[in-house]
Image 1 (cartoon, rainbow, N blue to C red):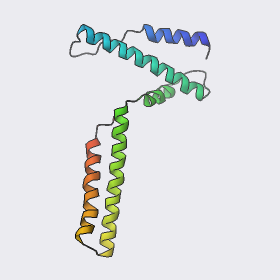
Image 2 (cartoon, rainbow, N blue to C red):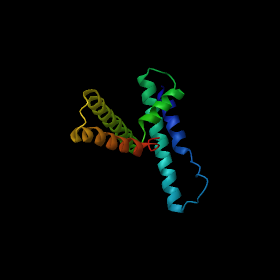
Image 3 (cartoon, rainbow, N blue to C red):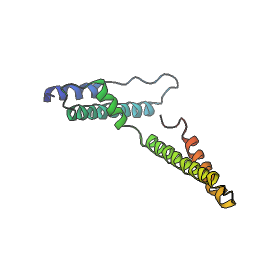
Image 4 (tube, rainbow, N blue to C red):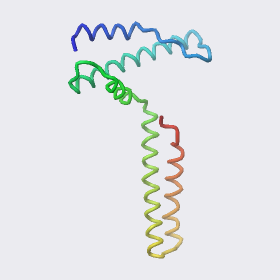
Length: 135
């Protein structure tokens, strides 16, 4: 990408004034903070999109590059929630494995019941806690 085009695109992103969201009104300080945050995100998104396009050896930034940049700039909260969901799924799998072993060996001891249902309970709790939170 030409250096002049890059500089022009950065200036365009910096000069854009984000529209205030509809609904509640902002205080003056809140609106200033909101606009600065949106401008900062737009600049970060543009830089990430350019980096991805350059990495893919593309002359232009395609919608795909912007989508990848958006995913890369995702908030840390959704990543933590996603990891917790994955851990919950693994723990559920361990509980189901214990259940399978307990049934196939016909070993219904209290220890085996605990090894089966505690992971199912904890994994299910973690998984359902994350339901709809990582978006």
